[in-house]
Length: 303
Image 1 (cartoon, one colour):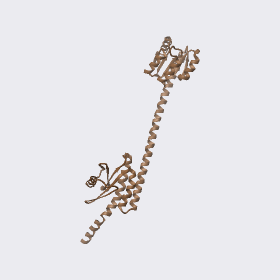
Image 2 (cartoon, rainbow, N blue to C red):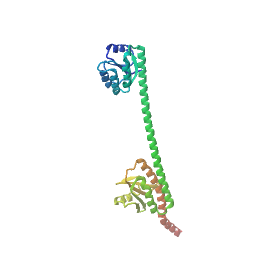
Image 3 (cartoon, rainbow, N blue to C red):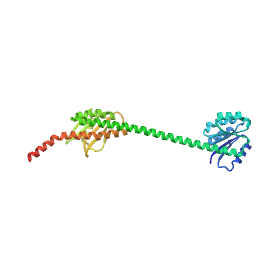
Image 4 (tube, rainbow, N blue to C red):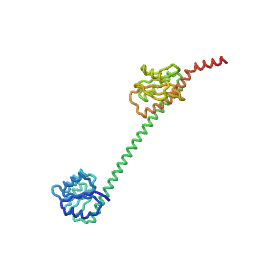
């Protein structure tokens, strides 16, 4: 097991003994002869385990271990001290978050086992922290997915309700003017329409239905592009071709008070391009009926 261990003791013979004890280990060992030196080292090199003596000049073990929590909060802390310093050891446990106590003089085998277990605990703590982080991330993703699904369901429900209302109008209304007037009140809330214009072309004639009078430039554009098959834009207007059986029956132009979210616009476009052509094809058949009757009369006369 690899790991980084800091030993802090003001007695050089103690540090030398520890170096000899771990000379063949795979640990990365760091040594400091004072609490101040230990804090300086920690600021540059975070470690996994800190082993500190209790009785040191200038800064004792209790203060050092307490301050080390600010510099290296995740390190496992161990006290190395004599039996006569039990009171200080209790303070270090309370303020320095000490995990274990090793008495001087120590048993080499016990020391090695304690350091090994401390490093193992540190590794498990890191793994637990990583798992909790991953779990929090997955929970966040799941929450976002649920919110997205709820939004899609709400948008789809709104689209279906709109389609049902328009289909009901097709069944109930015989006058296209009345159908369009009522359709405006249904469609406007979907996208916050400021103005809605329906352009129908019959031969050389273009019929416009609208909530507000459109500008002349838009009227000309609707006439010129009456056979357009792809959505396009003109000034502040979005224009959707209304297609049935590969034929453009009309153009629907609209402006909105607010920018439409892409997912809501997709639902709106799907609804409009599915339902309006059905109603307009029926209207076109009614509008073309006089001409068809006249043509049939001519054919019958010739027969």
